[in-house]
Image 1 (cartoon, rainbow, N blue to C red):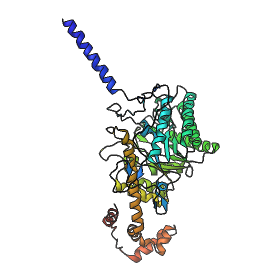
Image 2 (cartoon, rainbow, N blue to C red; image 1 turned 120 degrees about the horizontal axis):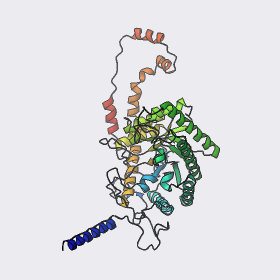
Image 3 (cartoon, one colour; image 1 turned 90 degrees about the horizontal axis):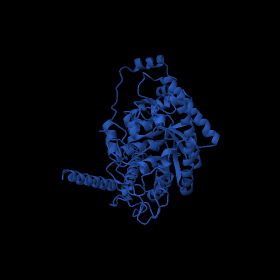
Image 4 (cartoon, rainbow, N blue to C red; image 1 turned 60 degrees about the vertical axis):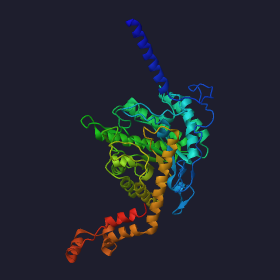
Length: 477
């Protein structure tokens, strides 16, 4: 009797496990699709049925699938909104984000996914990508090589996989464009010590070959920029690191990239994306100032600009506005990763930027820069783990685009009003003098300045009027 009871219990447990597995299994093909999902990239009908093309309906709209502030064709300060922003969808977060984290398995099982990383699945994702950006009304997209096509057992196989998927992307692209492409040089175990800064020459060579191919396909797709993000270009400990040698190797790698760009006739801008840490403890391109210094030291200014990510700015102890201004005044502002982090969390959360004040400050820098073309704003941002509906992909991008549009409108008001600019002008008016002009021209020596200091005596220092500046800013939010 006991043996029979044990057998019954085991049977029930097996049924329970099977039931859970079925419930947890990701959705595959639509019911009317007779083809095998793993063997074909065919997809019957739309990937996003029930989602219309997103239109501008104005601030009073309550429709979650409509823009309230972003009106693509509206002119602000002499330029259309779409041209100020050049919004781009990031393929990796939008179509490869699963909601997984170090403590939990994936939560997102999109209807078109079949659970594989096959060429067929890669092609299906690419079709979904172009339907998505078309319905969202965006003209650009960006990608990592290994996100759009599966890796291979050899470099040749990986390149062939990429070529096959890129050929489809070229066919589907039409008037859409690649804002930028890049090589994923951080996920594979070979890159555990870095890519261009690896202690292994064979890894350095493999990374060069991967960048070469990624640059070629970016060029083939008409890409307007190419990004270098060195997630593992840094160190965990200086005890076992020759930092000078690694920095020299990184510079030689970037010099080779410049040479190859020119050899193949790629006219796009090369961009470096600063980040202080994660996954390494210390990343060599810590922030905009560090990266600008690196480029100057190795004679690479003029060959590269910076892709500023707002979440990376806060990780380095700066505001996004600070990093944008640092890049701008150094002539290096090239592109913006439009995202944000959580002030209560100390890592790169890649959230959609929804802070209107931050968006306003960002757009003040962009306007001062005269725009960022041929760069743009790409949404290096992902849905929260708990957001699992397909429509959430649209809602997240809509609120991100609307937030930046409000920032542009607010920045334009500040500029047209002129009060903030006048406050800043008055603060530095003592330099709008003959001696001030000499100082700024480098023609005032210490003897002359000492003579003036004795002549003037103790100087009355004016108020900085910070609270008034903040009041002016708040008046447009």
